[in-house]
Length: 616
Image (cartoon, rainbow, N blue to C red; front, side, top):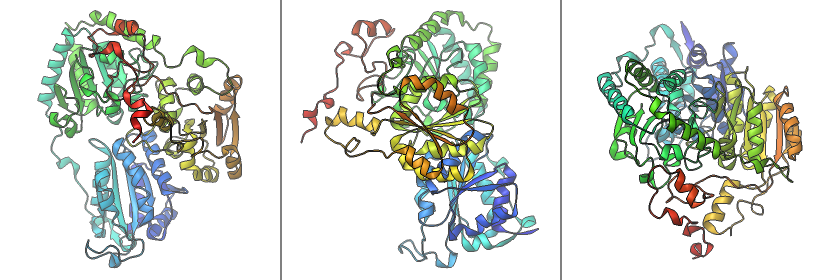
């Protein structure tokens, strides 16, 4: 059958199960967009800005899952260049997404790299995004279209997942192809990803170490979800019976209601203040890149008395000479395959003694309870809303079927400190790139990923400004997301940073250098229903109201001037178990089952917090 190439592309993704694509129309992608008019299996959502469309594609992929990629389309030149940030998002957070850009006609492409530009809005987008994609290709041979799309989807959805960009010149889009003569990409010809015998040997070694261990822990990253291994992981927890600690990309994998959930870890570690992972003597990390936000800057102090195992599908992360924190045992394997193998081996090992870890488990759960970031005094009804209290109360009322999308900076720290997840919920942000304004557009995509779920977006006043134009998209399509603006009227997390490191001299974070607009008036101008929450007395009733509201809603929560995000490490020399605000030294010492770092008794504010040390 002969068909226009643009139609072939759109039908291809519809057949994959992609039923929504996020677009901004332009002349150079006109033929592709026109192809939507000849099928009812997939529809486009016309957003106001390409960056928002890319963020929406990420949110779509994160909620739809099942290796169905997000899809976003833009025109040439500035259209494609506005994709750079969302492509970076998907690359660093390992999200399968396909970005398609239109390109000028082939005859106007510059003939040599030494020439800056020939055609109008000509841009070598493939070279620009090459470092942040798994694959980027301009297609000038129409007959290769099936091969290139097969390859693109395979790369985006396999191994360590990530984004792919396909650039289509106008004449390629217009070309007619014979579908019966198109050739595809055969992924079955690829070599096996890992050595099963080696994996089995590592598992045997780990179980031997586990039996000798007194304080074992598991650290779980987002790779477990990408491998569709959540249920397997929970079953493994029932067998090993040891504490599990999620990274920020795994907060909805090891949920707050899971029996062996030990708290949240890292430089803004939540419940437990990192005592569990830091006191461990055996650490198994699955599907985590072990970032500096987990280890802190003093990387030698991370889980320093633990024998450390790491399992990952990204071989680069397993090369010891490239690891910031060297792990003794590096296991190259898909997370699901590894967890299933470990589960089978653990069940078969009759000598596996988990009762000896009962005291350790109880201690980790006590740390989690004793060091909850949401304190009783936060519930006191003061002039403005305490955001930690608000988010905790919101989490209590949200159901296991709901989706929570967080933004970046201070509001994502608040959310990660305060929100208690339930099994079945989706809870995500973008943590690797972490751009302001992600959550509003990411929630838009999440809504289309599964319209049976209630989607709640939390952002800051700064982030809301970044993609505020998408209020029109929400209005156009009646997208029933609830957008909560934690409005502190400043750039909170950077305000805290510049007060710590630069003596509070700059006003670029507010309230002078930055001030937010009246979001209620703006939302009403777009025709969006609104709500304000001004004090604690309103919180309970208005949370019920917003969760049950049938339609798009913007909620302004008055957290005026709040920028205290605690607990956190203070400076990058401090080990992550000694968090600010510092515990009394006798209480801190009592919680350390291993030796504290040198000079722990004299933990004080680092020198860089002194304004005099920042004066030239």
